[in-house]
Image (tube, rainbow, N blue to C red; front, top):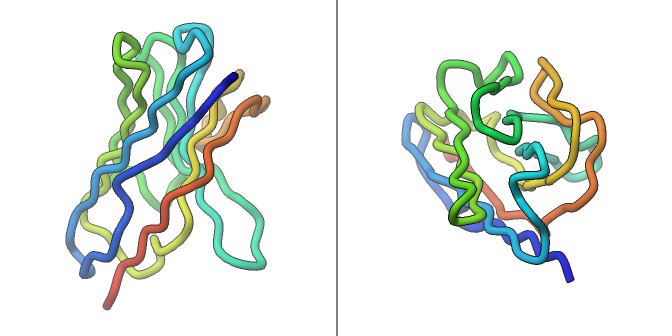
Length: 124
């Protein structure tokens, strides 16, 4: 059974940093591109950042480029998102997904597996 579990969310002041992790099991992570997404209540889920299977290609949505860094450790089946210079508008539930097709806007064209999400709250 495939499991995708995010961790690392929390409450932080504007300008601070958080590091999210996403651990997978039950799948061969090297076969999948991975992505981070976020969603506010009542709004559509949006792509934040994505990374190809080997980690050599990364994309970010415009609002986080230069502040967030995505990376992966396939040996540990783990995806990371380092978030620096956080802003109140970064507040959302953050989700990890495994799938195919990295997008230049930061998402995946085919999302196969999702985690349950981790809440990030940035206070002003």
